Length: 186
Image (cartoon, rainbow, N blue to C red; front, side, top):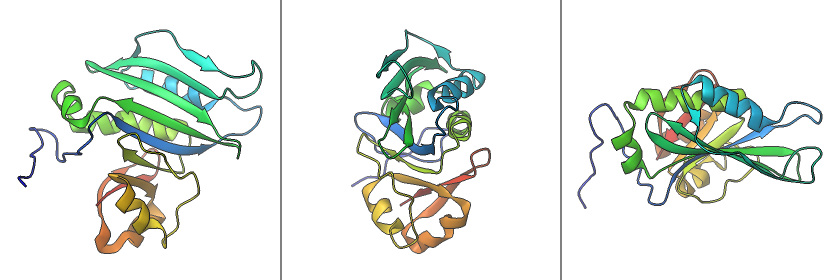
């Protein structure tokens, strides 16, 4: 099998087929601002703009079950979504086209990770993953379970305190300074 080289200005190739999804688990305080509103504000501040009407499903009071906002950023169609879990946490997702399309359309990898970091910081993300649509375990990762998560996902987002626990199973590809998370790639 021939390794796929990333285009100039991009240091990694992630083999996503259907979509590139950055999923993160974030806390929510009842009565506090919705994570979706904070994520949207951060994305707009990082250069995205709304490209369609928002959508929300819920009871009309309290935290919605799901919210979504289509965005356009650097010529790339994105979707910002938040899902409420019965446990009280919220999953915040930044959905982009497959990696091959993302790197062709967007200007530079650094700008992509700055957008991701801004959204993750805005929702106070605790951990997450870069994946191709599969589900995210909302439980806080531990050093013992980190290997299993790395085998399951393309990349795992963890706090700096946990990044070293991956050992030889992963490389710390990128630190995201605003959110305090590290992207580990297998």
